[in-house]
Amino acid sequence: MPIKSSLYEILGVSQNASQKEIKYAYYELAKKMHPDKISHENITEQEKKKLSDKFKEITSAYETLSDIEKRKKYDKYGDEEHNEFEFMNPFTRFQKQQTKSAKIVQKINVTLEELYTGAKKNISIKKIIACKTCNATGANDPKNIIKCKICKGHGKINIVKQFMNFMQQIQMDCSECSGNGKTILKEHKCKTCNGNKIIEEIVKYEIEIKPGTDTKIPIILENKGNEFPEADLKGDIIIILEQIKHKRFTRNNLNLIYEHDLNVIDALCGTKFIIEHLDGRKISITYENIIEPNKNYYIRTCGMLHKNNHNIKGDLIIKFNIIYPKHITSEQKQEIKRIFNHETKIESTKDISFNAKMEIYTKPIRDEQSDDEYTNENNNNNNNYNTQSGINMQQCSQQ
Ligand SMILES: [Zn+2]
Ligand SMILES: [Zn+2]
Image (cartoon, rainbow, N blue to C red; front, side, top):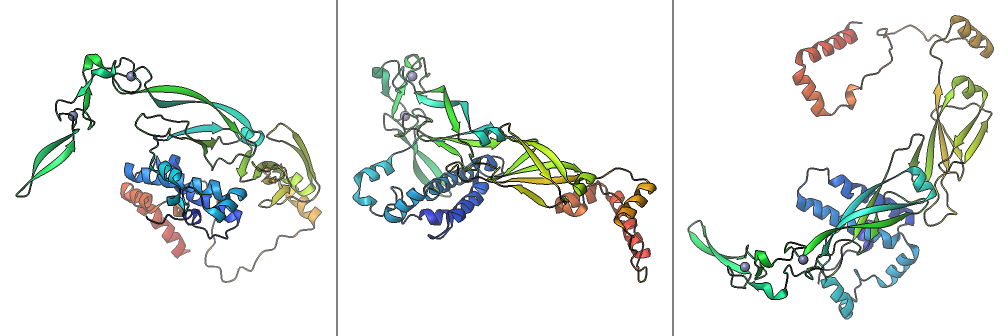
């Protein structure tokens, strides 16, 4: 029996990793294998399935290790999946041999307000269930299920293929009966499922979004999904939450980031403003010192609640966009200089290579383009590009 990787190995952390390290390791892995992300990537179905299975595996490992109680139990005894004593437990072994219906992955959009205060979301899921009319036999009457004439009930047919100079006999599943040896005549097929044994059903579920829910962790409705008659177990429904971008707040784990436009005069002289929080509370903020751009200002414990422990709260981080006046008159300039007792320092003009004119840059910077785009542009606008670059070179070398 192959030795299975431990839950720690699955997440790539050591056995004495902190809860924080486990969480981080999971997020990093989940980012790469999120079903939503890989569905856009140009990879084969087989690779997609592999990644999606891996995603489930890391999520399941994370579910155990992120829960302190479950982790303790796992450290002591292992779990069903990873129990080294499993061969002694016939029930576990039986469970392992069972097959499960394909999972359903459903994406739902949530607002930041819903994640902050908690919400209930109603979703409709289209799933496959066994046809009840024919009891998943596909026939209007079980006695109308007959032996397949093509394979004579064996389910397999032998075909002879030529391979180089050899004749080779290969056994294949019978296409007439899909390998099960039995068929149903058209007129005897179940009218509900048209002989397919399964039908589609739309089911409604209510999903609870707890305050502080993390969208990086999918919600798994175990055994609530597809019910293929040939599988032993019902499939899971995996709900992936996607947060709709908020106009004013962004979330960074437990912290909330709020951007506030502030006039330069208020930035220097102090300010008072109101933030309407995600639950509608209005917070009045007074600050009498100078507010600097690129600095973060905090209001402690005004961020997101921790989903499982509401005593843990993130912070509200306020970032200021300092708004400068569009124009300034020479009188205003002089007045400001006078108030601040300021003289503009002119650095030495010796050893200057050239005088450059500084402008506001509005176009994307060349360095940010990928090599591909660079080459394309070069090919498409060959002349134009060369001319531009020529002028730039000239400017730099001549002046
Ligand atoms: Zn057949
Ligand atoms: Zn049916």
